[in-house]
Length: 198
Image 1: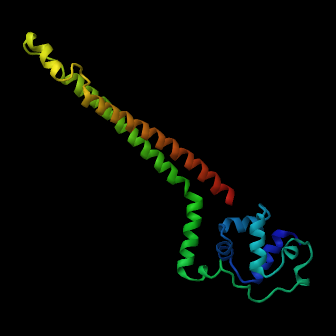
Image 2: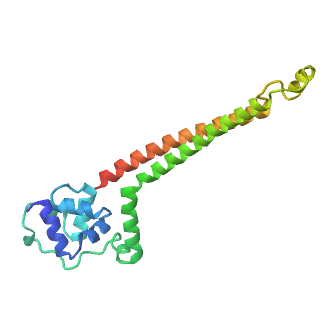
C-alpha cells in the first residue's frame, strides 16, 4: 500500500476529516488532499506528526505492508497540537493561521502601497515648497530696496527655512521609496512561503 493510501486509510480509521487532520498538523486541508491523491508528499516533520496522530511508527506509515497487519488504536493519542483544536478558539486560530499563510503576502502589498503614498506626498511637498519659496521671493517693489530686503531674508530664495522644508520633503520621498521596496520584498517572501507550505 502506498503512502497516500495509508494516509487516507489511517485518517478514516481515526475518524478524522481532512480539515481536522490539517488543523492538528498545521497545514491546509488542500495539502492533506494532495497527500491522499498522491499529488504531493508530506515533509519529514509532517510525516512524524502524521505517525504520532495515527498512533503508528513512521516505519509502519512508510512501509508498503498492508496496515491490517498492524491494528491501529480506536482513538488516536491526544497531543498538544490537538487539544486547542477541539474548542472554538483553537479552530479559529487554525483557520486564521491558514489564511495568514495563504494571503499574508497582501500585507507586503499594503506596505508597498503606503510607501508609494508617502513618496507621492513627498514629491508634492517638494514641488509645493519650491513653488512657494521661489514664487514668493520675487521682488516687485522699489528697485533701490531690492538688495536690502532680499538680504534680510537670507539673500537666496532658499534660506535656512526653505532648505529645511526641501530637505524634509526629500526625506519623505526617501522613506516612501524604502517602504515601497521593503513591502515588495515582504510580499514576495510571504507569497513564496505560502505556496511552499501546500
